[in-house]
Image (cartoon, rainbow, N blue to C red):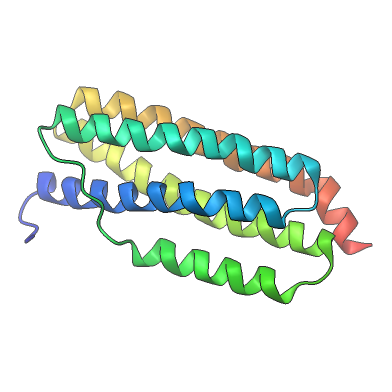
Length: 163
């Protein structure tokens, strides 16, 4: 699709984050199995539930806009996940691997925060109030997930990895 307007750009970016969220629904359980810390496992599993809700919210955004939910391959997310897999595969120490899992998860969270922040802004500019509220809920949850990961990392996981 040729992007000619801000609405076109919004639609294309919505497809991108839809792909990302659907991919994360498949990826998060694998990350949880690689985590050693029970708290980290629980946080990842909790975020999986939120991520499933994010997919549903995105489908609502598509619906209120009169669009069919379509995912557009997100090369950025695929690259971040590929890098996370490579790093986790190289690390034998469970505590260090947990630190790497948190770092990789936060990298993904920051990508999502950037995407959702942009979508909220554009939806506001385009007077898409229903989309703004749905996207803002997800943005708030992504910020909370990032904060939770930081709390897990510092000091517990990072200190164990440094020992």
